[in-house]
Image 1 (tube, rainbow, N blue to C red):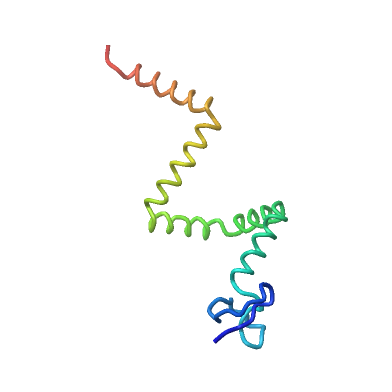
Image 2 (image 1 turned 30 degrees about the vertical axis):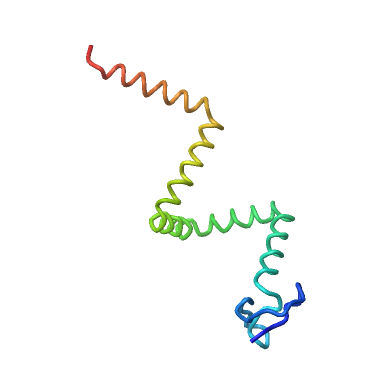
Length: 116
């Protein structure tokens, strides 16, 4: 079965449309691709609003978000490890003073623990 997308003006399969219960045919008026493009453009144009909205959601749903992240990391350990390496590298590059201080402290402790 085909449906006409009112944004890209193409006929597409019904499976390429999101569900929308308020509509007569129970499908969105635009296809998933157009909807995704529109949402991406909105987020780019309203970055501050989106950042605030996301922060408020996180604050209200911290346990839910943390649980979802923990489940993802458990299900995808390789991807989680790669992401952690990227974050660690960025942190080390942004905070060389903190890294040097931590390294110096560790070395000092190691030297004091070594028997003479």
